[in-house]
Length: 277
Image (cartoon, rainbow, N blue to C red; front, side):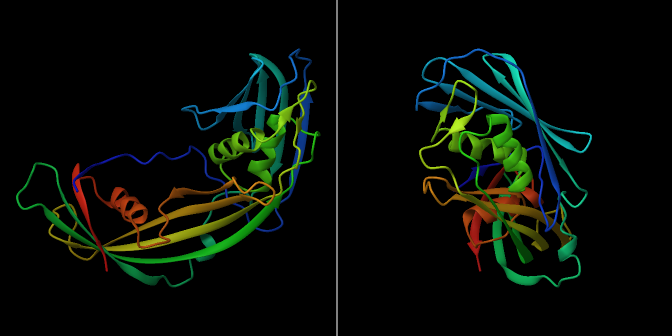
């Protein structure tokens, strides 16, 4: 089936972690009046990956805007439009996206994916065949938010710093986690059963050898790619069990991987995935 090129939505910041990275947390508060929420909390999807918005059934709106400022993660929480608190986390230089641990490892052949594609309705369309090689390493982090002891800004900051996930992913996870709890009159989050979270981080690197008659590459051209895969789970809440991707991640001979490789290498507006072999 013909497909139209869709740009992959990527989050603006990608953070990964290796062992023994030190984290320092801090919070400042302002007095903001609002009604304590009931259990009905709704996560509002926004177009800005650095912004988290949740609403309660009694009319309160909580917004957290998270940025990186002078090597600090800074999350500012607004309640009904007024700044309520600011949470910060300092991280060492080891807390940055890197695939250097893979640079000396030989990539292994994974498979070949085949495409058809054209821009000007060429007949027949171009044939593209890509031999895929890949390798990856795995790390794991865990985090158990304390019950009735942190604000939404602190939750987002801790997810970024402790679980080592990008801000955009942290906001999505925080939205899911907060919807399972309540926000008290002091702005602190409570759960009937506090989350026990984990994140498996896979650092992927790939190599692509391109064949076929597409004029944009000479046969045998080699391109490289890298990406991160995050699997986030909550042991106490099975509904939180999601996988997130950044960059080019080759983890299965499926449509998602084939589409990711295609968008990394080609730009034809009309294209098909023929299949893997």
